Length: 387
Image (cartoon, rainbow, N blue to C red; front, side, top):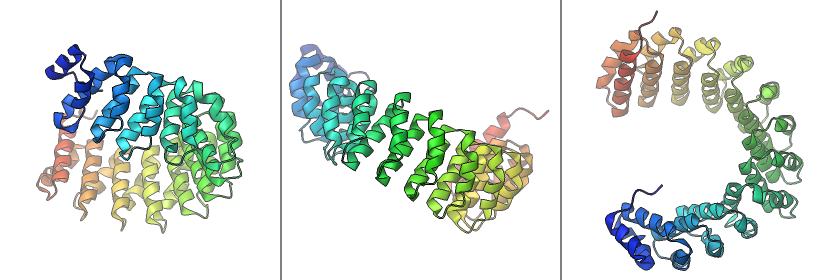
């Protein structure tokens, strides 16, 4: 939210000088003045709308963004055409600001935004704005799932996922059978965003889709639901022919956190693919089961630095005392990023045995490592004594 107004802007607002306030949105005034001017214009009401819509075509992106923000605050439907046009602005922040403003205007903007869904250049921002509007857009978005254009169906599915209402689940489940793989993939992702338990069964079915993209999105969506019903199917997906699907299944299993996935994830710590080893180490850290400690200790010597880092972080999450000495040894790793993560893990475990190694790390060649060592020593010194 913009900061409190500066005295200059206060005086302009008190005088009702809309033109001068819009001028203050420009870059020369500095960020505090620009933010204060936008806030003041947002309080100016419908009288400021014509000048603000004109400012959406201004030269500076700060001016255009501030105008969009203020129009969202005012909430006057008269600004809708100009804000929809701003969804194609060359500046990303302005596009997002215009979409947010349309979302705040709400139901009166729905028809215009549905039109923007049909345009490639405005599709993403329009879908986000419709998600913000929520219930007033629901019926029209559900109807748009039957549009003849696949891109429109994709955008409608994405917006429905953002709304997240249970009423969107059944239409999105139906969209898992769409003839277009892109629509099926977006529908799967949207169902994951809703987190609705009714989506779990259909998403498990989508793990057998002929499109790898759909299978991957279905796996990620199942992870977002957190349902243990999906664990068996996700473990089976660890043998998918596409590595991207396998990685998505690993991530999902980590999110769900069910210890029954421990053994297959541990096996992946020695997979030929470094990406799979990285993903499995991260997932095992999320599950936080002590049964993974010894395999993760072995992964501290993996040839891939990211694997070593993620194994260290996972050991810190599990916080088993067996990991302390191996992590102390890993403080001398040749990779500075690994040393950083190892030290963070030792800080999380909080065992005083690590103090000597952490003190030595205060002389490390990398500032980030030295800072991590200081923080870890603070954590250990502030930890309660063991019983």
